[in-house]
Amino acid sequence: CCDLGYHQSISKVFRYYLASRQWAQQNMSAGMYQLDTALSELSQNQDRDTLMQANISAFCLPLRFQYQPYEGDQ
Image (tube, rainbow, N blue to C red; front, top):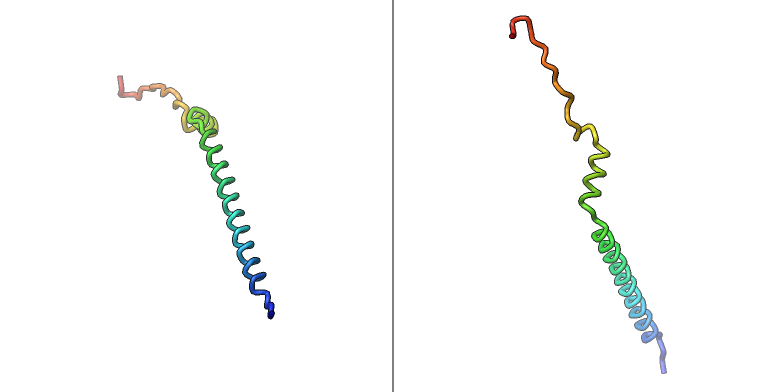
């Protein structure tokens, strides 16, 4: 009888909703995969060595102090 496009509108709304939910789920899965990859690639020894090489002056032993007596010290 009188078709106002109600069913078509509802169908489009639900399709867009489902598409957005699928997109969000795919993004979540991709993010979780990237996080898992980053966690599996963590290396304490390599990170420590990189930090020490980048800041070598902070981790070097100081120069040896040479004792030079003052006139009254003996």
